[in-house]
Amino acid sequence: MIKNILFLFFFLQCAGLIAQIEINNLDANGKKDGLWKGVYPESKRPRYEGTFSHGKEIGEFKFFDDTKAGSVIATRTFNPNDNVAYTVFYDQRKNKVSEGKVINKLFEGQWKYYHLGATTIMTTENYKNGKLEGLRSVFFPSGKIAEETNYANNLKNGSSKKYSERGIILEEANFKNNQYDGEAIFRDVDGKIVSKGKFVNGKKTGIWQFFENGKLIEELNMSNSKNNNAVKNK
Image (cartoon, rainbow, N blue to C red; front, side):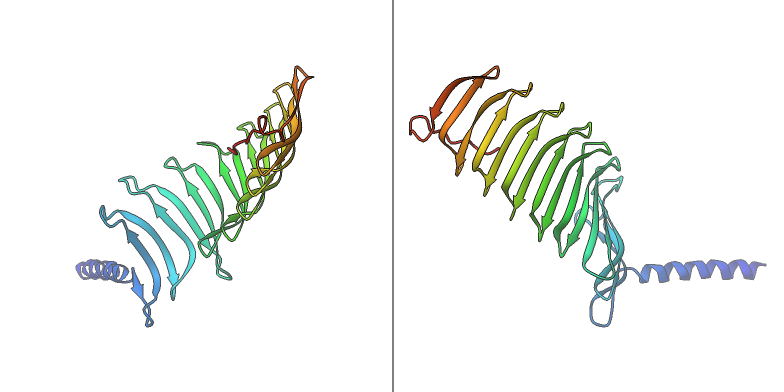
């Protein structure tokens, strides 16, 4: 009986040593292989853990914040067939902050961002090679649309609309390289037109109409230098 207990004790000890040895190994070519655990340089707290296969990440990696709690602040799940890593960021209360694909360390495809501490989507964005490309949508906490803007090469390009939570279109405009360009209409919260006209390279040009309570009160030729007013892009 005593021999059996001693054998079990030494077996567990050896198993523990083997497990320790098997962490943070390199293969014959000097590439990471097997389970790896990284630490923060100063605090020595856990920073990440995940498995490599001859230098290539496989399966799920977990990343931790530099606190005593060691909360998971991100996960990356690697697809064995390509370089895609589905990535999820979390706050310290385990709520999702954002999620989407990363390819070669660049955002790709659709990314979702969540309202603070909630499961409702705040923003959806589309990426190509790490740059915004296509429709970017913003939502109120209620889930109703707040903004729709098109992007090309990481800049606003194409149509853009902003909405009130009641569904009123507050702004209809077009952009070219992040500047207002083309016809634009601005409305108040009741849906009444406040102003409309045309932009060229971020500046009002031609005849602009201005309204009060839905009635036309003034027309100005914004091509006239004294009336021309550049509108800053927020």
